Image 1 (spheres, helix red, strand yellow):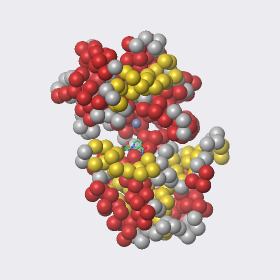
Image 2 (spheres, rainbow, N blue to C red):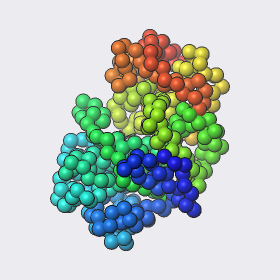
Image 3 (tube, rainbow, N blue to C red):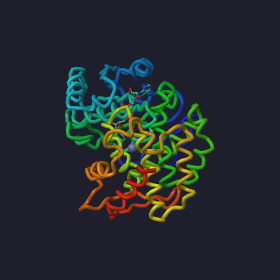
Image 4 (cartoon, protein in one colour):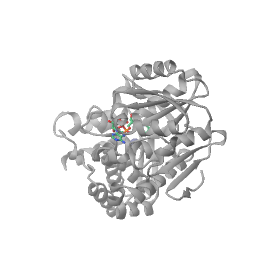
Length: 374
Ligand SMILES: NC(=O)c1ccc[n+]([C@@H]2O[C@H](COP(=O)([O-])OP(=O)(O)OC[C@H]3O[C@@H](n4cnc5c(N)ncnc54)[C@H](O)[C@@H]3O)[C@@H](O)[C@H]2O)c1
Ligand SMILES: [Zn+2]
């Protein structure tokens, strides 16, 4: 990884993975360069664009037009939007369509969409003919700053999320900040929780910058590009180092997502926002972070309109959500449990996250019990 290169309005992050190195191109309207970049990578390549219905309505034609202008053939595979497509049935549909489109070993699969399409199309590319190269065109903020970086692809099993998958690095990522203009404000905010996470876990200066510039970032343009590029670099650097820190807020967050049935009641990023605040408050209850830092994290997430408290979740009072034991059971099913102890990412300050490998479940339970009464 080298520092972002400035090409006028476009930032190119060069992900250094030896012979799998690739570029992440970030900027307003960079989708228009898709065709030329694909043609430069592999002249004469055939492509298939995998996308979902909503994204297709907004962005499929511009993507196809860019490819056509560069003389690149493209077929289209359109799935239903939503997590349900990350399934055996969704994988079958995409795989069969790619075979029917005669995508061969040297061709490209292009994932045009959010994390669902990226994970699904990436996995289909990983197994098609034992591996076909793929291009990521992430269209949600979450996909741009998180799921399109790191090479993880896959689908869900009826028994759990992301249980089937493969590591498959893209050959190119095009993160166009303008495509986010059609994303719903709520989806945008949910993705923003992951952006804020990079500041909270390792970069106080970035967090302060977000506090000052979030409104401009939500509006678009230069601040948005800077935030996305900074997040991508932070994410990529963690990939090869202290990867676990990326789970900040996620142990609590995943339990909340599970408790709400992975439904529209709580988007992933919203669970992460609440989870980050809980992780900060839990750290404060252990006396390792100043209370002022906790308040600052909550204040910022609330300022952009994210939920920050358990009580902010729709229907919170009903069901198992208001039950510390039920949440503990869900957390115990998380991957981060070893021999009865929980691994947590805790905070010593904004910008300083640490891994705690032997957190006593009773401490977490008592903490949650207190929060639920609050
Ligand atoms: N591979 C990884 O490392 C990784 C990391 C984090 C999350 N994920 C996965 O990512 C998925 C979540 O991603 P997501 O939040 O992008 O969800 P998503 O792909 O379902 O997109 C959210 C919604 O926004 C719509 N949408 C996307 N881009 C749009 C645009 N530009 N304009 C209008 N609508 C648009 C989609 O149609 C969808 O309805 C989950 O399945 C999660 O497991 C993977
Ligand atoms: Zn996440």
